[in-house]
Length: 264
View (cartoon, rainbow, N blue to C red):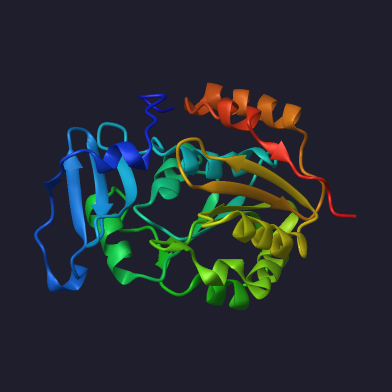
């Protein structure tokens, strides 16, 4: 059970905060900074953009709304047994799952060795937790199935990673899911036409899609399934149960999900 139930903020607010540098610059990190202000710690890139945020007094609590939205994937099956997370960041997904759902087998994939090092040194990811260092699309290509939940958050500073938008990637993601599984993907579309392009690609493999537009951010989180998605009423009921057991309230996000017409 989380000690602190809610602490929600967005990236725009974080950009206004002065931050003290926690790490000493090293050649290995190539300019990546670990910054801290009060109870918040985050990763800052050389161009000033921010990737991940952690609340020091409750590291397992997902601070950013889009991370909370991705965790709604836990509601799509009554008892998910495993989760594949593509794109580690500072390990927000990992900290929550390892803390609150120790019975879920967690597989993490990250292409950048620096991010893996940072997450374990500064962001409370256990050194014993295995992170596969390779491209997400390569992992899906060589591991063809068996997951109840697949989470993909491999956006770059310029937007959604091109590999995440490819037809091949989407097809591999669909094949990786068990029956009734869900593919939750975070995108940062730069235009309305890009949103349409992403949806067309996803619908080539996933007939059912729920959409959540993250307030005050550019993120959109999509929940894609091969079989019919649970009803919004069912998701709300499961969110209530999860709140009682973990302290994380996902009901406000579930209320704002929009079901796209199923592809016939």
